[in-house]
Length: 138
Length: 471
Image (cartoon, rainbow over all chains, first blue to last red; front, side, top):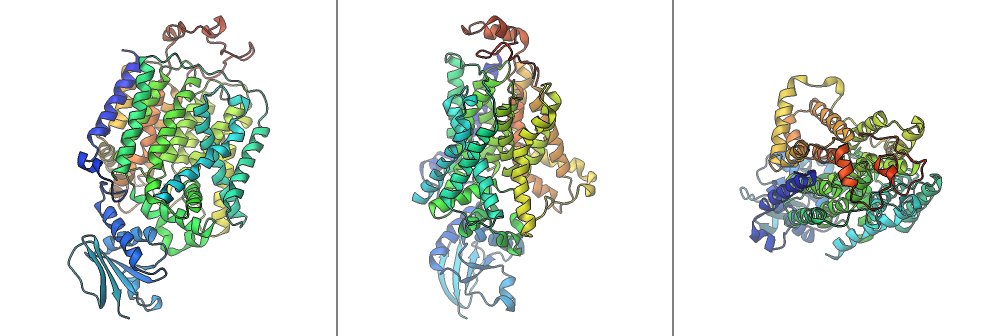
Protein backbone atom coordinates (compact mmCIF):
# COMPACT_ATOMS: atom_id res chain seq x y z
CA UNK A 1 0.00 0.00 0.00
CA UNK A 2 1.27 3.45 -0.84
CA UNK A 3 2.00 5.95 1.92
CA UNK A 4 -0.66 8.30 0.57
CA UNK A 5 -3.33 5.62 0.81
CA UNK A 6 -2.29 4.72 4.34
CA UNK A 7 -2.29 8.36 5.42
CA UNK A 8 -5.71 8.85 3.87
CA UNK A 9 -7.04 5.75 5.59
CA UNK A 10 -5.76 7.12 8.90
CA UNK A 11 -7.32 10.46 8.20
CA UNK A 12 -10.66 8.83 7.37
CA UNK A 13 -10.60 6.84 10.59
CA UNK A 14 -9.94 9.95 12.69
CA UNK A 15 -12.74 11.88 10.98
CA UNK A 16 -15.14 8.97 11.44
CA UNK A 17 -14.39 8.83 15.16
CA UNK A 18 -14.82 12.59 15.44
CA UNK A 19 -18.23 12.37 13.73
CA UNK A 20 -19.39 9.41 15.79
CA UNK A 21 -18.48 11.20 19.01
CA UNK A 22 -20.29 14.40 18.14
CA UNK A 23 -23.23 15.28 20.38
CA UNK A 24 -26.53 13.58 19.51
CA UNK A 25 -28.21 14.63 16.24
CA UNK A 26 -30.86 16.52 18.19
CA UNK A 27 -28.14 18.74 19.63
CA UNK A 28 -26.76 19.36 16.18
CA UNK A 29 -30.15 20.53 14.97
CA UNK A 30 -30.61 23.30 17.50
CA UNK A 31 -28.36 26.20 18.26
CA UNK A 32 -26.25 25.81 21.37
CA UNK A 33 -27.15 28.17 24.18
CA UNK A 34 -23.53 28.53 25.21
CA UNK A 35 -20.12 27.49 23.82
CA UNK A 36 -20.00 24.92 26.65
CA UNK A 37 -23.34 23.10 26.34
CA UNK A 38 -21.84 19.65 25.76
CA UNK A 39 -18.42 19.90 27.36
CA UNK A 40 -17.26 17.64 30.17
CA UNK A 41 -17.83 20.50 32.60
CA UNK A 42 -21.61 21.01 32.84
CA UNK A 43 -21.12 23.76 35.41
CA UNK A 44 -19.61 26.08 32.82
CA UNK A 45 -22.70 26.13 30.59
CA UNK A 46 -25.06 26.61 33.54
CA UNK A 47 -22.96 29.42 34.97
CA UNK A 48 -22.66 31.02 31.54
CA UNK A 49 -26.45 31.21 31.20
CA UNK A 50 -26.98 32.35 34.79
CA UNK A 51 -24.36 35.10 34.64
CA UNK A 52 -25.65 36.32 31.29
CA UNK A 53 -29.10 36.78 32.82
CA UNK A 54 -27.70 38.24 36.03
CA UNK A 55 -25.80 40.87 34.07
CA UNK A 56 -29.12 42.27 32.84
CA UNK A 57 -30.48 42.51 36.37
CA UNK A 58 -27.54 43.94 38.30
CA UNK A 59 -26.34 47.50 37.66
CA UNK A 60 -22.67 47.91 36.73
CA UNK A 61 -20.32 48.61 39.62
CA UNK A 62 -22.50 46.80 42.19
CA UNK A 63 -20.83 44.68 44.85
CA UNK A 64 -21.78 41.07 44.21
CA UNK A 65 -20.98 37.92 46.17
CA UNK A 66 -20.70 34.69 44.23
CA UNK A 67 -21.77 31.62 46.15
CA UNK A 68 -22.05 27.98 45.11
CA UNK A 69 -25.38 26.49 46.15
CA UNK A 70 -23.48 23.63 47.74
CA UNK A 71 -21.45 26.16 49.80
CA UNK A 72 -18.43 24.04 49.07
CA UNK A 73 -15.45 26.45 49.13
CA UNK A 74 -13.81 24.88 46.07
CA UNK A 75 -17.01 25.11 44.08
CA UNK A 76 -17.55 28.68 45.20
CA UNK A 77 -14.03 29.58 44.10
CA UNK A 78 -14.71 27.91 40.75
CA UNK A 79 -17.92 29.92 40.35
CA UNK A 80 -16.11 33.11 41.29
CA UNK A 81 -13.51 32.47 38.60
CA UNK A 82 -16.20 31.87 36.01
CA UNK A 83 -17.95 35.07 37.02
CA UNK A 84 -14.77 37.14 36.86
CA UNK A 85 -14.73 36.92 33.08
CA UNK A 86 -18.44 36.99 32.42
CA UNK A 87 -19.34 39.85 34.76
CA UNK A 88 -16.44 42.27 34.29
CA UNK A 89 -18.44 45.37 35.15
CA UNK A 90 -19.35 44.16 38.64
CA UNK A 91 -17.39 44.38 41.86
CA UNK A 92 -17.18 40.67 42.54
CA UNK A 93 -16.56 39.24 45.99
CA UNK A 94 -15.63 35.78 46.94
CA UNK A 95 -18.00 34.37 49.56
CA UNK A 96 -15.51 34.75 52.39
CA UNK A 97 -14.51 38.21 51.29
CA UNK A 98 -18.13 39.21 51.36
CA UNK A 99 -18.07 39.04 55.10
CA UNK A 100 -14.92 41.09 55.64
CA UNK A 101 -15.69 44.56 56.99
CA UNK A 102 -13.05 46.24 54.81
CA UNK A 103 -14.88 45.33 51.65
CA UNK A 104 -18.33 46.11 52.96
CA UNK A 105 -21.47 44.12 52.54
CA UNK A 106 -22.33 43.03 49.02
CA UNK A 107 -25.45 44.47 47.46
CA UNK A 108 -26.27 41.32 45.51
CA UNK A 109 -25.67 37.58 45.83
CA UNK A 110 -25.56 35.18 42.93
CA UNK A 111 -26.14 31.61 44.03
CA UNK A 112 -24.81 29.21 41.42
CA UNK A 113 -26.38 25.77 41.16
CA UNK A 114 -29.62 24.25 42.21
CA UNK A 115 -28.79 22.74 45.56
CA UNK A 116 -30.67 23.55 48.73
CA UNK A 117 -32.71 26.72 48.41
CA UNK A 118 -31.32 29.39 50.64
CA UNK A 119 -33.11 32.53 51.69
CA UNK A 120 -31.17 35.76 51.94
CA UNK A 121 -32.43 38.95 53.58
CA UNK A 122 -33.72 40.82 50.58
CA UNK A 123 -35.53 40.25 47.32
CA UNK A 124 -35.03 37.37 44.94
CA UNK A 125 -34.69 38.77 41.44
CA UNK A 126 -34.22 35.51 39.58
CA UNK A 127 -34.62 31.81 40.25
CA UNK A 128 -33.75 29.30 37.55
CA UNK A 129 -32.43 25.79 37.38
CA UNK A 130 -28.96 27.33 37.05
CA UNK A 131 -29.18 29.35 40.25
CA UNK A 132 -30.60 32.51 41.77
CA UNK A 133 -29.93 36.23 42.04
CA UNK A 134 -30.73 38.13 45.24
CA UNK A 135 -30.69 41.84 46.00
CA UNK A 136 -29.80 42.25 49.65
CA UNK A 137 -31.36 44.66 52.09
CA UNK A 138 -28.47 46.72 53.43
CA UNK B 1 -24.21 37.98 16.78
CA UNK B 2 -23.08 41.23 15.16
CA UNK B 3 -20.33 41.68 17.73
CA UNK B 4 -19.18 38.12 17.09
CA UNK B 5 -18.97 38.69 13.35
CA UNK B 6 -17.08 41.94 13.86
CA UNK B 7 -14.79 40.25 16.38
CA UNK B 8 -13.82 37.58 13.86
CA UNK B 9 -13.70 40.06 10.97
CA UNK B 10 -11.03 41.99 12.88
CA UNK B 11 -8.56 39.23 12.01
CA UNK B 12 -8.78 40.23 8.35
CA UNK B 13 -6.16 42.79 9.30
CA UNK B 14 -3.61 40.04 9.97
CA UNK B 15 -2.88 39.03 6.34
CA UNK B 16 -2.77 42.72 5.46
CA UNK B 17 -0.11 43.28 8.12
CA UNK B 18 1.98 40.36 6.93
CA UNK B 19 1.54 41.15 3.24
CA UNK B 20 4.48 43.57 2.85
CA UNK B 21 6.84 40.73 3.76
CA UNK B 22 5.04 37.83 2.11
CA UNK B 23 4.58 39.63 -1.20
CA UNK B 24 8.36 39.57 -1.63
CA UNK B 25 9.26 37.73 -4.80
CA UNK B 26 11.20 35.21 -2.75
CA UNK B 27 7.94 33.77 -1.53
CA UNK B 28 6.16 33.74 -4.88
CA UNK B 29 6.87 30.06 -5.32
CA UNK B 30 4.18 29.46 -2.72
CA UNK B 31 0.57 29.28 -3.89
CA UNK B 32 -1.45 32.44 -3.17
CA UNK B 33 -3.70 30.75 -0.60
CA UNK B 34 -0.71 29.49 1.38
CA UNK B 35 0.90 32.92 1.20
CA UNK B 36 -2.32 34.45 2.51
CA UNK B 37 -2.26 32.14 5.53
CA UNK B 38 1.44 32.75 6.15
CA UNK B 39 0.82 36.50 5.84
CA UNK B 40 -1.85 36.12 8.50
CA UNK B 41 0.46 34.17 10.78
CA UNK B 42 3.26 36.70 10.37
CA UNK B 43 0.72 39.50 10.78
CA UNK B 44 -0.42 37.99 14.08
CA UNK B 45 3.15 37.92 15.40
CA UNK B 46 3.92 41.47 14.31
CA UNK B 47 0.62 42.94 15.52
CA UNK B 48 1.05 41.31 18.92
CA UNK B 49 4.62 42.57 19.07
CA UNK B 50 3.49 46.11 18.22
CA UNK B 51 0.86 45.89 20.96
CA UNK B 52 3.38 44.68 23.54
CA UNK B 53 5.94 47.34 22.63
CA UNK B 54 3.23 49.98 22.66
CA UNK B 55 2.17 48.89 26.15
CA UNK B 56 5.80 48.85 27.25
CA UNK B 57 6.20 52.41 25.99
CA UNK B 58 3.09 53.47 27.88
CA UNK B 59 1.15 54.29 24.71
CA UNK B 60 -2.58 53.74 24.62
CA UNK B 61 -3.61 51.23 21.94
CA UNK B 62 -5.11 52.72 18.82
CA UNK B 63 -6.47 50.29 16.24
CA UNK B 64 -5.28 51.99 13.00
CA UNK B 65 -1.92 52.97 14.49
CA UNK B 66 -1.24 49.46 15.73
CA UNK B 67 -2.08 47.98 12.34
CA UNK B 68 0.09 50.55 10.57
CA UNK B 69 3.00 50.02 12.96
CA UNK B 70 2.85 46.27 12.49
CA UNK B 71 2.58 46.57 8.71
CA UNK B 72 5.53 48.99 8.79
CA UNK B 73 7.54 46.42 10.68
CA UNK B 74 6.61 43.87 8.06
CA UNK B 75 7.87 46.24 5.35
CA UNK B 76 11.13 46.81 7.23
CA UNK B 77 11.67 43.07 7.47
CA UNK B 78 11.10 42.81 3.73
CA UNK B 79 13.82 45.36 3.12
CA UNK B 80 16.11 43.87 5.72
CA UNK B 81 16.38 40.40 4.25
CA UNK B 82 18.13 40.81 0.95
CA UNK B 83 18.85 38.56 -1.93
CA UNK B 84 16.93 36.67 -4.53
CA UNK B 85 15.55 33.75 -2.71
CA UNK B 86 13.90 31.78 -5.40
CA UNK B 87 13.11 28.45 -3.97
CA UNK B 88 11.43 26.03 -6.23
CA UNK B 89 8.43 24.24 -4.97
CA UNK B 90 7.27 21.03 -6.45
CA UNK B 91 4.14 22.04 -8.30
CA UNK B 92 1.05 20.19 -7.27
CA UNK B 93 0.59 17.19 -9.47
CA UNK B 94 -2.49 17.21 -11.63
CA UNK B 95 -5.24 16.50 -9.15
CA UNK B 96 -5.43 12.75 -8.89
CA UNK B 97 -7.85 10.75 -6.80
CA UNK B 98 -5.48 10.79 -3.87
CA UNK B 99 -5.12 14.59 -3.89
CA UNK B 100 -8.85 15.11 -4.30
CA UNK B 101 -9.58 12.72 -1.45
CA UNK B 102 -7.01 14.42 0.75
CA UNK B 103 -8.57 17.84 0.12
CA UNK B 104 -11.99 16.34 0.86
CA UNK B 105 -10.78 14.77 4.09
CA UNK B 106 -9.10 17.96 5.24
CA UNK B 107 -12.32 19.85 4.57
CA UNK B 108 -14.35 17.19 6.39
CA UNK B 109 -12.02 17.37 9.39
CA UNK B 110 -12.41 21.14 9.60
CA UNK B 111 -16.21 20.81 9.23
CA UNK B 112 -16.25 18.25 12.04
CA UNK B 113 -14.27 20.58 14.30
CA UNK B 114 -16.74 23.33 13.42
CA UNK B 115 -19.66 21.05 14.33
CA UNK B 116 -18.06 20.21 17.69
CA UNK B 117 -17.54 23.91 18.34
CA UNK B 118 -20.95 25.26 17.39
CA UNK B 119 -22.74 22.55 19.35
CA UNK B 120 -20.81 23.66 22.41
CA UNK B 121 -18.90 20.39 22.76
CA UNK B 122 -15.36 21.68 22.28
CA UNK B 123 -15.42 24.85 24.40
CA UNK B 124 -12.53 25.33 26.80
CA UNK B 125 -13.29 26.63 30.28
CA UNK B 126 -9.86 28.27 30.24
CA UNK B 127 -11.51 30.77 27.92
CA UNK B 128 -13.74 31.80 30.83
CA UNK B 129 -11.06 31.49 33.49
CA UNK B 130 -8.30 33.59 31.98
CA UNK B 131 -7.93 33.95 28.20
CA UNK B 132 -11.20 35.85 27.85
CA UNK B 133 -11.01 37.91 31.05
CA UNK B 134 -7.45 39.03 30.29
CA UNK B 135 -8.26 39.98 26.70
CA UNK B 136 -11.36 41.77 27.92
CA UNK B 137 -9.41 43.71 30.54
CA UNK B 138 -6.70 44.68 28.04
CA UNK B 139 -9.28 45.84 25.51
CA UNK B 140 -11.05 47.87 28.15
CA UNK B 141 -7.78 49.49 29.27
CA UNK B 142 -6.53 49.89 25.66
CA UNK B 143 -3.21 48.45 26.79
CA UNK B 144 -1.81 45.44 28.61
CA UNK B 145 -3.34 46.19 31.98
CA UNK B 146 -0.44 45.70 34.38
CA UNK B 147 -2.53 46.63 37.42
CA UNK B 148 -5.03 43.93 36.49
CA UNK B 149 -2.28 41.36 35.98
CA UNK B 150 -0.60 42.23 39.27
CA UNK B 151 -3.81 42.23 41.33
CA UNK B 152 -4.38 39.38 43.74
CA UNK B 153 -7.80 38.78 42.20
CA UNK B 154 -6.16 37.83 38.91
CA UNK B 155 -3.43 35.73 40.46
CA UNK B 156 -4.98 32.52 39.12
CA UNK B 157 -5.05 33.92 35.59
CA UNK B 158 -1.38 33.11 34.97
CA UNK B 159 -0.26 36.75 34.51
CA UNK B 160 3.04 35.69 32.92
CA UNK B 161 1.46 33.64 30.11
CA UNK B 162 2.84 35.04 26.84
CA UNK B 163 0.80 37.78 25.21
CA UNK B 164 0.00 36.84 21.61
CA UNK B 165 -3.47 35.39 22.08
CA UNK B 166 -4.64 37.91 24.67
CA UNK B 167 -3.26 40.77 22.57
CA UNK B 168 -4.97 39.60 19.38
CA UNK B 169 -8.24 38.94 21.16
CA UNK B 170 -8.04 42.34 22.84
CA UNK B 171 -7.51 43.86 19.40
CA UNK B 172 -10.59 42.05 18.07
CA UNK B 173 -12.57 43.14 21.15
CA UNK B 174 -11.62 46.78 20.56
CA UNK B 175 -12.83 46.46 16.96
CA UNK B 176 -16.07 44.72 17.96
CA UNK B 177 -16.74 46.86 21.01
CA UNK B 178 -16.76 43.89 23.36
CA UNK B 179 -15.33 40.44 23.87
CA UNK B 180 -17.27 37.77 21.95
CA UNK B 181 -17.14 34.43 23.75
CA UNK B 182 -18.74 32.32 21.03
CA UNK B 183 -16.59 33.87 18.32
CA UNK B 184 -13.47 33.14 20.36
CA UNK B 185 -14.30 29.43 20.29
CA UNK B 186 -14.64 29.58 16.49
CA UNK B 187 -10.94 30.39 16.23
CA UNK B 188 -10.40 26.63 16.65
CA UNK B 189 -12.00 25.53 13.34
CA UNK B 190 -10.81 28.69 11.58
CA UNK B 191 -7.17 28.17 12.51
CA UNK B 192 -7.47 24.51 11.60
CA UNK B 193 -8.78 25.58 8.18
CA UNK B 194 -5.82 27.94 7.83
CA UNK B 195 -3.48 25.07 8.60
CA UNK B 196 -5.22 22.85 6.05
CA UNK B 197 -4.70 25.51 3.38
CA UNK B 198 -1.04 26.28 4.03
CA UNK B 199 0.47 23.00 5.13
CA UNK B 200 0.37 21.09 1.82
CA UNK B 201 2.31 23.91 0.14
CA UNK B 202 4.99 23.87 2.84
CA UNK B 203 5.27 20.10 2.64
CA UNK B 204 5.70 20.32 -1.11
CA UNK B 205 8.68 22.57 -0.40
CA UNK B 206 10.38 19.76 1.44
CA UNK B 207 12.81 17.40 -0.15
CA UNK B 208 11.42 14.24 -1.68
CA UNK B 209 7.91 14.90 -0.44
CA UNK B 210 5.52 12.05 -0.43
CA UNK B 211 1.83 12.79 -0.65
CA UNK B 212 1.92 16.25 0.90
CA UNK B 213 -1.85 16.58 0.62
CA UNK B 214 -2.45 13.26 2.34
CA UNK B 215 0.05 13.97 5.12
CA UNK B 216 -1.52 17.37 5.63
CA UNK B 217 -5.00 15.81 5.78
CA UNK B 218 -3.71 13.38 8.41
CA UNK B 219 -2.32 16.24 10.52
CA UNK B 220 -5.55 18.23 10.23
CA UNK B 221 -7.73 15.19 11.02
CA UNK B 222 -5.65 14.29 14.07
CA UNK B 223 -5.81 17.85 15.38
CA UNK B 224 -9.53 18.14 14.63
CA UNK B 225 -10.32 15.08 16.75
CA UNK B 226 -7.79 15.92 19.43
CA UNK B 227 -8.81 19.57 19.64
CA UNK B 228 -12.48 18.65 19.87
CA UNK B 229 -12.05 15.88 22.44
CA UNK B 230 -9.68 17.89 24.61
CA UNK B 231 -11.86 21.00 24.37
CA UNK B 232 -9.44 23.39 22.74
CA UNK B 233 -12.00 25.82 21.33
CA UNK B 234 -11.39 29.18 22.94
CA UNK B 235 -8.03 28.13 24.30
CA UNK B 236 -4.66 29.27 22.93
CA UNK B 237 -3.71 25.78 21.69
CA UNK B 238 -5.09 26.22 18.14
CA UNK B 239 -2.85 29.28 17.72
CA UNK B 240 0.09 27.41 19.16
CA UNK B 241 -0.46 24.45 16.85
CA UNK B 242 -0.78 26.66 13.78
CA UNK B 243 2.58 28.28 14.47
CA UNK B 244 4.28 25.06 15.51
CA UNK B 245 3.16 23.00 12.53
CA UNK B 246 3.78 25.70 9.94
CA UNK B 247 7.12 26.59 11.52
CA UNK B 248 8.32 23.02 11.53
CA UNK B 249 6.89 22.41 8.07
CA UNK B 250 9.03 25.27 6.83
CA UNK B 251 12.15 23.94 8.54
CA UNK B 252 11.69 20.72 6.58
CA UNK B 253 12.23 22.60 3.34
CA UNK B 254 15.44 21.75 1.52
CA UNK B 255 16.79 25.28 1.46
CA UNK B 256 15.65 26.85 4.71
CA UNK B 257 19.11 28.34 5.17
CA UNK B 258 18.18 31.10 2.75
CA UNK B 259 17.69 34.25 4.81
CA UNK B 260 14.14 34.85 3.75
CA UNK B 261 13.04 31.36 4.68
CA UNK B 262 14.92 31.45 7.95
CA UNK B 263 13.30 34.78 8.73
CA UNK B 264 9.85 33.40 7.95
CA UNK B 265 10.62 30.34 10.07
CA UNK B 266 11.86 32.62 12.84
CA UNK B 267 8.65 34.64 12.76
CA UNK B 268 6.55 31.48 12.97
CA UNK B 269 8.65 30.28 15.89
CA UNK B 270 8.14 33.68 17.55
CA UNK B 271 4.41 33.05 17.21
CA UNK B 272 4.98 29.71 18.90
CA UNK B 273 6.78 31.10 21.96
CA UNK B 274 4.30 33.96 22.28
CA UNK B 275 1.20 31.78 22.01
CA UNK B 276 1.77 29.51 25.01
CA UNK B 277 4.46 28.71 27.55
CA UNK B 278 5.02 25.25 26.12
CA UNK B 279 5.93 26.88 22.81
CA UNK B 280 9.31 27.70 24.35
CA UNK B 281 10.59 24.11 24.73
CA UNK B 282 9.17 23.33 21.29
CA UNK B 283 11.16 26.14 19.72
CA UNK B 284 14.28 25.27 21.69
CA UNK B 285 14.10 21.68 20.47
CA UNK B 286 13.20 22.62 16.89
CA UNK B 287 16.10 25.06 16.53
CA UNK B 288 18.59 22.80 18.30
CA UNK B 289 17.82 19.80 16.12
CA UNK B 290 17.49 21.90 12.99
CA UNK B 291 20.99 23.26 13.50
CA UNK B 292 22.32 19.83 14.39
CA UNK B 293 20.86 18.25 11.25
CA UNK B 294 21.60 21.17 8.94
CA UNK B 295 24.89 21.00 7.08
CA UNK B 296 24.44 24.28 5.24
CA UNK B 297 27.53 26.44 4.87
CA UNK B 298 25.68 29.53 6.14
CA UNK B 299 27.12 30.88 9.36
CA UNK B 300 25.71 29.50 12.58
CA UNK B 301 25.30 32.96 14.06
CA UNK B 302 23.29 34.10 11.05
CA UNK B 303 21.04 31.07 11.13
CA UNK B 304 20.48 31.37 14.86
CA UNK B 305 19.92 35.11 14.59
CA UNK B 306 17.25 34.78 11.95
CA UNK B 307 15.57 31.80 13.58
CA UNK B 308 15.62 33.02 17.15
CA UNK B 309 15.81 36.81 16.78
CA UNK B 310 12.05 37.32 16.44
CA UNK B 311 11.39 35.06 19.45
CA UNK B 312 13.95 36.85 21.60
CA UNK B 313 12.56 40.26 20.62
CA UNK B 314 8.92 39.26 21.18
CA UNK B 315 9.39 37.42 24.45
CA UNK B 316 11.99 39.96 25.58
CA UNK B 317 9.50 42.80 25.18
CA UNK B 318 6.92 40.80 27.14
CA UNK B 319 9.22 40.07 30.07
CA UNK B 320 10.56 43.62 30.05
CA UNK B 321 6.96 44.76 30.38
CA UNK B 322 6.24 42.35 33.21
CA UNK B 323 9.45 43.17 35.05
CA UNK B 324 9.16 46.94 34.65
CA UNK B 325 5.52 46.92 35.85
CA UNK B 326 6.20 44.40 38.62
CA UNK B 327 3.44 42.20 37.17
CA UNK B 328 5.58 39.08 36.69
CA UNK B 329 9.23 38.21 36.29
CA UNK B 330 9.56 34.65 35.03
CA UNK B 331 7.93 31.36 34.17
CA UNK B 332 7.79 29.21 37.26
CA UNK B 333 4.33 28.98 38.72
CA UNK B 334 4.45 25.22 39.15
CA UNK B 335 7.70 24.95 41.07
CA UNK B 336 11.41 24.56 40.54
CA UNK B 337 13.15 21.90 38.46
CA UNK B 338 15.32 21.31 41.52
CA UNK B 339 12.29 20.01 43.38
CA UNK B 340 11.22 17.40 40.87
CA UNK B 341 9.17 14.58 42.38
CA UNK B 342 10.83 11.56 40.78
CA UNK B 343 8.76 9.37 43.03
CA UNK B 344 5.78 10.42 40.94
CA UNK B 345 7.27 9.15 37.69
CA UNK B 346 4.96 6.17 37.35
CA UNK B 347 1.93 8.13 38.46
CA UNK B 348 2.73 10.85 35.93
CA UNK B 349 3.15 8.38 33.08
CA UNK B 350 -0.05 6.50 33.86
CA UNK B 351 -2.04 9.70 34.27
CA UNK B 352 -0.69 11.05 30.99
CA UNK B 353 -1.71 7.78 29.35
CA UNK B 354 -5.20 8.08 30.80
CA UNK B 355 -5.48 11.68 29.67
CA UNK B 356 -4.44 10.82 26.12
CA UNK B 357 -6.87 7.90 26.13
CA UNK B 358 -9.70 10.22 27.17
CA UNK B 359 -9.01 12.36 24.11
CA UNK B 360 -10.52 10.10 21.45
CA UNK B 361 -9.01 6.84 22.78
CA UNK B 362 -5.55 8.27 22.05
CA UNK B 363 -6.30 7.78 18.35
CA UNK B 364 -4.96 11.22 17.36
CA UNK B 365 -1.56 9.92 18.52
CA UNK B 366 -1.86 6.26 17.67
CA UNK B 367 -3.14 6.66 14.11
CA UNK B 368 -0.27 8.89 12.89
CA UNK B 369 2.14 6.50 14.63
CA UNK B 370 0.55 3.52 12.91
CA UNK B 371 0.64 5.31 9.56
CA UNK B 372 4.31 6.06 10.11
CA UNK B 373 5.08 2.41 10.79
CA UNK B 374 2.89 0.97 8.03
CA UNK B 375 3.97 3.38 5.29
CA UNK B 376 7.56 2.22 5.56
CA UNK B 377 8.77 5.41 3.96
CA UNK B 378 11.83 7.39 4.82
CA UNK B 379 11.46 9.03 8.20
CA UNK B 380 12.13 12.66 8.80
CA UNK B 381 14.39 12.99 11.78
CA UNK B 382 13.58 16.58 12.73
CA UNK B 383 9.90 16.06 13.65
CA UNK B 384 10.70 12.85 15.50
CA UNK B 385 13.51 14.45 17.47
CA UNK B 386 11.33 17.42 18.41
CA UNK B 387 8.46 15.11 19.39
CA UNK B 388 10.78 13.08 21.63
CA UNK B 389 12.31 16.17 23.24
CA UNK B 390 8.93 17.81 23.82
CA UNK B 391 7.48 14.63 25.30
CA UNK B 392 10.44 14.27 27.66
CA UNK B 393 10.12 17.91 28.68
CA UNK B 394 6.42 17.54 29.43
CA UNK B 395 6.91 14.36 31.46
CA UNK B 396 9.57 16.12 33.54
CA UNK B 397 7.36 19.20 33.91
CA UNK B 398 4.51 17.10 35.22
CA UNK B 399 6.84 15.90 37.99
CA UNK B 400 7.06 19.41 39.42
CA UNK B 401 5.89 19.57 43.01
CA UNK B 402 2.28 20.60 42.47
CA UNK B 403 -0.31 19.59 45.06
CA UNK B 404 -2.64 17.69 42.74
CA UNK B 405 -0.71 16.32 39.75
CA UNK B 406 -3.54 14.00 38.70
CA UNK B 407 -5.98 16.86 38.12
CA UNK B 408 -3.33 18.99 36.47
CA UNK B 409 -2.33 16.27 34.05
CA UNK B 410 -5.92 15.21 33.54
CA UNK B 411 -7.10 18.56 32.27
CA UNK B 412 -3.97 19.53 30.33
CA UNK B 413 -1.93 16.58 29.01
CA UNK B 414 -4.00 15.85 25.91
CA UNK B 415 -3.54 19.48 24.86
CA UNK B 416 0.10 19.90 25.83
CA UNK B 417 1.01 16.70 23.99
CA UNK B 418 -1.04 17.68 20.92
CA UNK B 419 1.99 18.86 18.90
CA UNK B 420 3.33 15.31 19.17
CA UNK B 421 0.37 14.01 17.17
CA UNK B 422 1.12 16.47 14.38
CA UNK B 423 4.87 15.80 14.54
CA UNK B 424 4.34 12.06 14.13
CA UNK B 425 2.35 12.72 10.98
CA UNK B 426 4.96 15.18 9.71
CA UNK B 427 7.69 12.58 10.20
CA UNK B 428 6.13 10.72 7.32
CA UNK B 429 6.53 12.42 4.03
CA UNK B 430 9.91 11.65 2.64
CA UNK B 431 10.20 9.02 -0.03
CA UNK B 432 13.08 6.66 -0.15
CA UNK B 433 15.39 7.15 -3.08
CA UNK B 434 13.92 4.40 -5.33
CA UNK B 435 10.43 5.72 -4.77
CA UNK B 436 11.74 9.17 -5.61
CA UNK B 437 12.57 8.11 -9.11
CA UNK B 438 9.12 6.61 -9.58
CA UNK B 439 7.55 9.65 -8.09
CA UNK B 440 9.38 12.01 -10.41
CA UNK B 441 8.91 10.06 -13.59
CA UNK B 442 5.66 11.63 -14.74
CA UNK B 443 6.83 15.21 -14.32
CA UNK B 444 7.46 16.91 -17.64
CA UNK B 445 9.43 19.78 -16.05
CA UNK B 446 12.02 17.49 -14.52
CA UNK B 447 15.56 17.98 -15.69
CA UNK B 448 18.44 15.47 -15.52
CA UNK B 449 19.98 17.50 -12.72
CA UNK B 450 16.73 17.53 -10.78
CA UNK B 451 16.32 13.79 -11.13
CA UNK B 452 19.70 13.25 -9.59
CA UNK B 453 18.54 15.25 -6.60
CA UNK B 454 21.04 18.04 -7.14
CA UNK B 455 18.88 20.70 -8.73
CA UNK B 456 15.53 22.21 -8.05
CA UNK B 457 13.40 23.20 -11.00
CA UNK B 458 13.69 26.89 -11.69
CA UNK B 459 16.95 27.20 -9.83
CA UNK B 460 20.33 27.93 -11.26
CA UNK B 461 23.11 25.40 -11.64
CA UNK B 462 24.76 26.84 -8.55
CA UNK B 463 21.73 26.31 -6.37
CA UNK B 464 22.28 22.75 -5.29
CA UNK B 465 20.68 21.04 -2.39
CA UNK B 466 23.63 20.43 -0.21
CA UNK B 467 21.59 20.51 2.94
CA UNK B 468 18.81 18.46 4.39
CA UNK B 469 19.30 14.97 3.21
CA UNK B 470 17.19 13.48 5.95
CA UNK B 471 16.00 16.41 7.94
